[in-house]
Image (tube, rainbow, N blue to C red; front, side):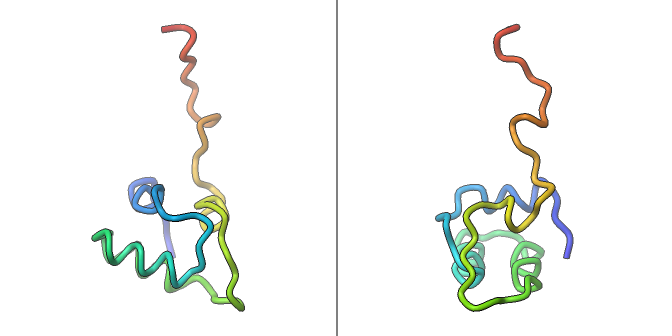
Length: 74
């Protein structure tokens, strides 16, 4: 399983919180690349575990703090 910023972006508008199966269904319905569906299928399914955000699936997902953009400067 591998994630990139591009692949994870397909889940940015997902209906959080969601289970793994709901995320797979969302990815298929929105036309996400096959790699997104395969990555979600590779997650070990625990009893109806609900994910609150993409950070729970991909802990390295960059947050706004990771970008050194200071809106006040511009």
